[in-house]
Length: 350
Image 1 (tube, rainbow, N blue to C red):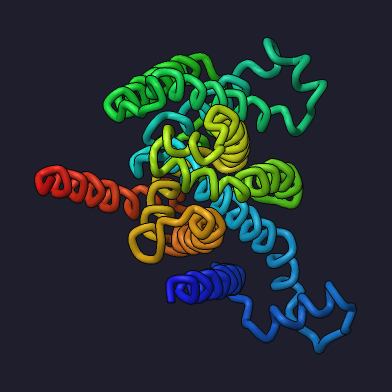
Image 2 (image 1 turned 60 degrees about the vertical axis):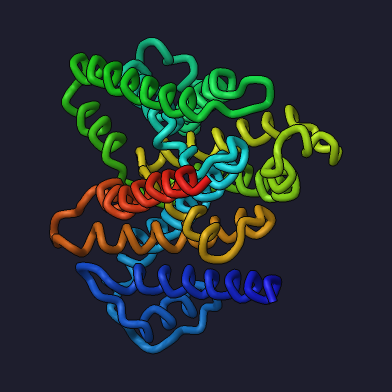
């Protein structure tokens, strides 16, 4: 019965992602009817030479909506899977990349590269080109995750107080250094820094999608096989080692792949908070805590949820556009409070 529920959940999440993408493509300042969407895609993919449709709709679909929806799905899946893996590694549902400072570390390195890239990091830009910003954000995410692991894990056990306090310290330091960089930034750089701090998919195009794709695929493909190991770690690191799990190797892989995904996501869309907290926890309490299910399910649910959040962000106040990080915060903060209250209730019961 449980296995059947997991399969049903995966199919339902696939349908949810598909419907979210279609809805996000069709709805906006310029409406694209579903029949015209089918005609445009048929013409582009199979050269069917369908009946006439407004060329403006085709231009909007191909140049704006399609890359934006695909980028949102990639980032949503990447952040949610990274959040699921990090929660499993620390064995705590509060270990979300945004709350513990991983996103802030990635954003700080990205902002540093934006402000100082033409001077201090000129050589890096020449070597890596368009990938340089993603690599800078990945470096920030990796260093932050490594520091958190070093400070929060003692003798194989996670000190939650140290984890959260370290996350608060990293977030505060990132805000302070970002403020300093803002002070010396130019007007154009200030607009970019504002983008990183609030999060948006407004800069999506086919070039940003092709840059994000290898990082996202590496993160998701790297994390998917970790389900069995994370299930063993959930029993305790001593029990996991008795089951033949190499804890240090698993943690190292999770740190690298999660940092890769979070860093690339921050580089392409800025800081999108609480998504990585919300998605895995909802699936954990509603379907199963099995990480072999949670990792792929988090990817599907996170992708669909971010696409829907982006749809709301760009349509709720047309012609203006809300930062997507504001919407994810509105969704995530109640869940964060619920997790804390639930933990307090469980401790009082024990």
